[in-house]
Length: 351
Length: 68
Image (cartoon, rainbow over all chains, first blue to last red; front, side, top):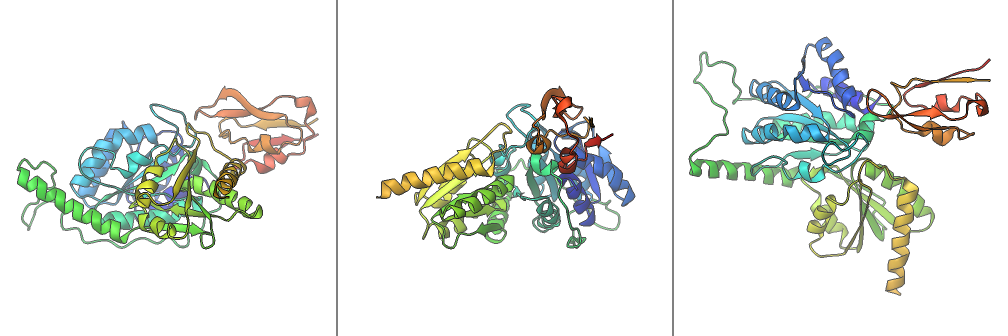
């Protein structure tokens, strides 16, 4: 199954009942899959007239208590940012899928990881964050969908699934047996008609500065709660490692191949793969820095996650970087060569 | 002689087939399909042995090989 189709099926299995989308390569198969499966499963599918319309349909569906999802690729996600900011301000749950492609501007349709900063820093205007999940295989792409809906509902915040063109297009076997419909959270804020109850309002316009400040602090406390409780990451061969490669998504998969190769050459390399890009696993990096001095950040961009790694290390250790932007997919051999050259150079310096 | 048919609309230009072709005659062309991918094409049809490895590795089942 292609990554896009697997994501669609997982969304339906976890109880997504509204999908609004606008086609863009490389996430077309998701819209296509939803167009067929959503009506079959009793949900609503609308191909909107634009990305902006799609995200606002998500906002409307979320206010009405549905479990909505939308998806796009880089240029389309830029258009959705206004709506995502409103979702965060109104504290509404929603899942937004971004199958990143080469940028900036129209870019190309090849896989890239150039939307890291946009996804993890909020992206739209205002003081807010979105939870960002970055799977690295088609199976994980499917498994992470119920997690995304669960996080969105429990924290009442938009959640972004950050894939890339390669994950979306890649064909792999997928097992859906672990994906169950997630429970319904009590929603005391939704607008369903005020018959037999006092009327409610969902809004983000707060003219009173005192009120707006209080709202901002309230959101801040929620984001702190997320930072404390929801960090996820995977480590691979870090126990005896001398050098740790930090990579996420499909780049982590390439890095795993490179590390296996490096181990054969007796270079003790390990991998740290953040699964939540926000909240970032800073504590885990700091913990690794106690016995590892050498960090190697690998991304399919000119260097975006490296900022978070540097912030996490707070001056400790050495951080190096290798990246290929613009939709180029580096091979494990290429990365292994770069890391081993760097390794032997630093060894020479130590002697 | 074998005939290799490539479904241009299924191809996503991943170039797995060109990586595995023992004769090295499959490569990414400069033709775009409807999705916007540069599709794979055969350069020298006379060299093709009809081994069908390309059809076997294609993840999108875009290649058909006819032997006679």
